[in-house]
Length: 121
Image 1 (cartoon, helix red, strand yellow):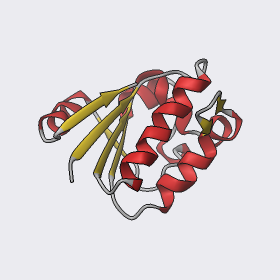
Image 2 (cartoon, helix red, strand yellow):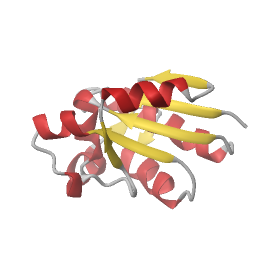
Image 3 (cartoon, helix red, strand yellow):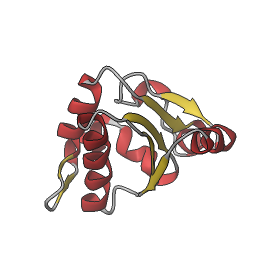
């Protein structure tokens, strides 16, 4: 199976694209691929409980449902931009994806270099 990096920067103001990004993340896991997720920029807003419960995309489902499935998975590497979170006053404790670790641009580049495929939303 492939090692797939999904890089998410889409803001909450685009709920369909935001939910779609995590619908694809969920599909990567369901298909048995190795997931590497990096959420940065305005995308870090999506990782809070408040946003996760309020975002639903047209045809791409509820963000909270996708997060539930992602949290239930036993595999995958999940990162969020610590710089982006800090700039938006989002504490690491407010990130709802289990096991999510802060990263920086260098970490993103390292992850990209080590993956077979990269998808960006």
